[in-house]
Structures are given as C-alpha cells and as structure tokens.
Length: 327
Ligand SMILES: [Ca+2]
Ligand SMILES: [Ca+2]
Ligand SMILES: [Ca+2]
Ligand SMILES: [Ca+2]
Image (tube, rainbow, N blue to C red; front, top):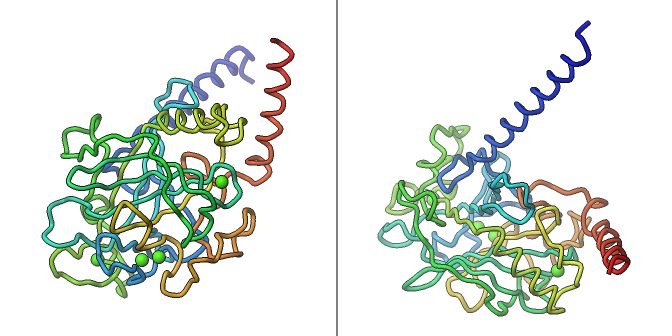
C-alpha cells in the first residue's frame, strides 16, 4: 500500500494533468477548427431540410443531416482560463448549402443567432452577422413577443464591430470565416446515398459545395449588454449577475436583409410549419413548432431543467438578501 502523502501527491498530479487536458481540448476551438470540437444544438426538429428557404438562395439555405451527425447549427466556447466566468470567445457555426453567385469567399446574407436567456420561449437578444458593403457582427435586443418563427422583430442594436475575415494567418484578430465544409472537415465519407460535402445535392455547379459560416463574439461583450439591461430595468434584475453559468435557449435563422427575418429557420421545415406556431414550451421538446434549443450553457451543452432557470431565481434571491444584510 502506498503511503498516504504519496497518494495525495499522485492525486494532485492526476488533477493537474486532467486540467491541462481539459484546457487543451478547449483551446483548440478556432474559426477553422474541425466541427468535432463544436457542439451541435438540437433545435427540436429536422436540422435542416433542403429547399425550405423563402429566398431560394443557396448561401442563406441552412442544411443538415442529423441522422448522419451533420447538423445545421453548432456552438463552441474558448475559455481564456483566467478563472473569470464572463470572458472567453463564443463561436457559432452554421451550415449553408453553397455560395451565391460568383464565389468570393463572402457570406452575403444575414445570419441571426436568437437567444432566450429568461427561459420563457421568447427571444431576448439576437447576434447578427451581415451588412453591405461592410459587414458587422452586432448584438441586438429582440422585439417584444419574439416567440415564433413569424413574430421575431429586431430591436435596438446594443453592440457592433466590423467583420474581420480569417485569412489563414490572422487567427487572433479575425472573427469570421466562410469556407467549404470540405476544407474544414476533411475525410468525411457518406453512406453512398448522399455527398457529405453537398447535402442538397446541387452537384458540381459553381458555388454549390456546402459551406460553414463560423463567427465569434467576445462573450464579455454579450455579458456587458445583458448586465446593463438588467441594471436599467429592461430585463429582470437577477441578470445583473449574468455569466457563463446561466442557461439559455438558442436558434439560428437567416435573412436576405437586415430589416426583418425572412429566409430559413434552423430546425423546422419552413414550407410546412405555420410560422405563427410558438416555439416549444420550455421543457417540452415535442410541443410547438420547434426551432429553439432546450436550455444549454455557452458551450452548447444541455443544462438540466432543475439546475437552470428556476434555480437561478433562488440564487439571485440569496444574493439580494446577503447584499442587503451587509450594506
Ligand atoms: Ca433549409
Ligand atoms: Ca450544396
Ligand atoms: Ca425570454
Ligand atoms: Ca428550415
């Protein structure tokens, strides 16, 4: 039997090794990282049918084939390892059926990640990628009652920064990358019935190889927006504490322009689902029209219902009481 002090040192060594492994696994996420490092979000339905976008444009047509592990929407998070719960790079990756017109490496449509942080099935914020002639990544407030595919409206823009396209050498300053799935996830094989690099089967016509749009925001910028809204009474003041431990529900939708939402919803067949059907009720993945994920953390990992929205209410109540006590 090993002496107790040795076993303790062994335990510490194992813990250190584990932390290093975990840190390394996270540190690998980047704009051009393999999709294996991202987390697919279940959107309560198919993710995503072919030819169900209103615009009939390949670059805003979300495609996925979940039965083969090829999804339309992914999330990733790079913790900076500082011990803070508010910093880190927050990545979104969405799969599109091609590139419109003459391929020039630019995603010309508008892409919206919808975020419900209050857990009531109604969006609170949108992260937008788009713009012409200059592209931006922005954080917008969602309009009141944005709780179904047809009811989402764009509110005030609260944060914006220019898109800096990844060119292979500017990994630290770039925040966007539009590249073929083939280039990012080499070596995929289908089962002979479909092409893993062209899910819509557009063939070899120009610009029809499927593409990933991958973009990132500094999580701190999102935290700052949410906390400011909480301090100003725009959302419940428990979100003054918002950080990466909070659960949220997310969706992906594309648009031809930056004025409204009008093209393809991830996770629903836009040709069949009534756009006025509310997203599923929280905790009821089979209800409603789908389109919205269940409660997830910033990494995209599911957060158990009991540990998410409801529990946070209690934690906040405690925080308020202790703040009052020590004033
Ligand atoms: Ca689609
Ligand atoms: Ca395609
Ligand atoms: Ca909400
Ligand atoms: Ca769709």
